[in-house]
Length: 333
Image (cartoon, rainbow, N blue to C red; front, side, top):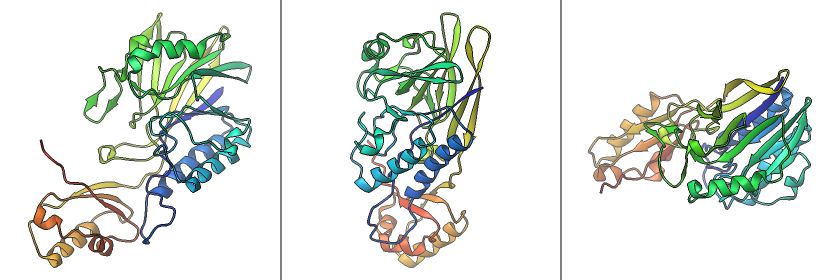
């Protein structure tokens, strides 16, 4: 068996201040911990290849200590002699921060339309891809894909690695089907074992038919919850197993590995009050009912109550083990 680990949307740097002005539990460590867990699993299970589907960082301009921390971990992993391939996502604005650490022989960046080849267990593996196209993938795909495969020799296992929204991908309550930034299934190539993509945070697999083949589109989702809409989603990564038959290699199994995540809770305050003591008692009572390691999204749209939700009060009522943020007011119309 040939094994590939595929993950994406690690969003390193979220809620990870370099010099925090106050002592409270932040989420930055959670994102780094799960990133490390994926790489540790890949190393310990002797994975043949690791692929990352983009949004490595949480934004394009990342503080240098965050970049160094993320790349230090990746460099140590690369010393295991396991190739690591990454395609830049939209959060990186399609370009990863530069660092001498990324010059490691086992780290490969799809910084432009191209294909990397690897020989593992008597198989030639071709990983084709290009950085995230933020505007008009529908119009540009055929051109950039042709550029990525120009002059390529044949390979035993062919994978397309992207960071795009693909038709039929889903988030909670919505399926992407149309639009200039949605890549139609009919445009995806034949002759590939799978299309692997980051960008959609919900783990999922669906299929398209091409030249009498049923080809999977695989999203591993994000490795941590980044939005309240992901409140019920499991987070993790995929392990892809390929087997050699007499005439070719086939993808025979996809296994989703769940990563540990803290409970995410939405807490709505609907009480009308101008008395801080009343509000304090209510918050303490409601927070005491929750898992004390929860990530809490507090929402209040009653102006009289909302003005009492000052940072000092929230710090005082929130347990040290909990992470609480105040949602912005929803503006209608």
